[in-house]
Length: 178
Image 1 (cartoon, rainbow, N blue to C red):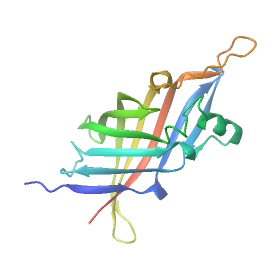
Image 2 (cartoon, one colour):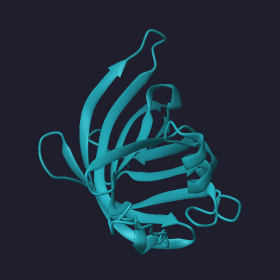
Image 3 (cartoon, helix red, strand yellow):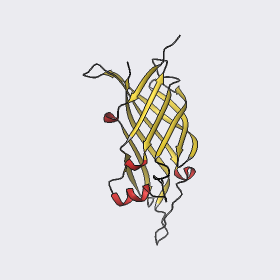
Image 4 (cartoon, rainbow, N blue to C red):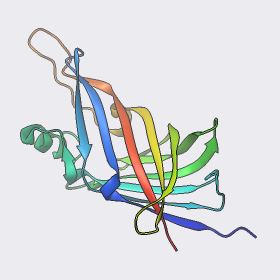
């Protein structure tokens, strides 16, 4: 019988980034600075792994405090009512040598939708302290309006201020638990 192995997210060597079009001509990037997650697997190649992940809305950072405040407000994420974004995997399947497809339930502002993300396995290594680490890059795109992030602005000239598609770029490192 296979034994389950638990891996815990190492926040010191991980980052959660998002990108959105601004005025349709340029891209604004932001990060979430506080998050946690774990991965439980019964296979050395991680297929079928169960992944739980959450991040704190209050930790949003777009390098502009006024915009961050607006994003935390009820017009966007409503951090007071919905302090976390969560993800729970439903499948983790191999799509190539070091490539996987990660499907799961993403919950933003109390709205849960099934999403599929692309995952690239960066490999596993042992650090200076003898801990086994595994690295992954996760990418994907979601439509913000499907999650209740419906705020829209239009300039005087009629340009849309904010794009609907949010690109996700997540680099995570997990530490194998004894």
